[in-house]
Length: 176
Image 1 (cartoon, one colour):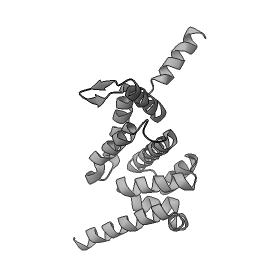
Image 2: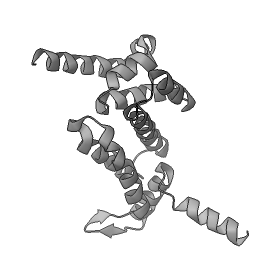
Image 3: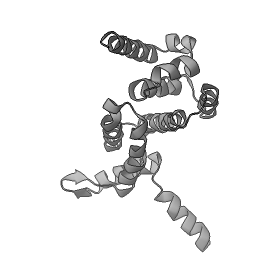
């Protein structure tokens, strides 16, 4: 391995990605690496900070919860299946990308294209939709414009989240 290849490998291992954050947190737990009585993973900390910036695109009442939820998922490393954690964190990453694009004025056609390029299955589009409905001020519109009524009705968890957000929206409108 050349020096450049070695440096690239090391850089990739310490990049704050979901996969590296989970790996590092599992290692911290195995080795009992703690700080102030809490498991400590610098890659996980960097990943959480990287994702925290997207809380600015969330509903005001959910901004703090965005980061707390991501942190809670990271701290589940080693206790639940890695695939589950990665799926959950990727849904947050995908929602973050979409919320940022919406905030920057992208059209629904562009948002639909971005969502398609993310390569979703039925399970992951349901998870993404739930994240958007829960955290994004444009969640209902995203569900209707991008996911569509057919998928919403087909996917139970998404349908339940959609109905719940529609009820909340209706209550807000009635209280005005």
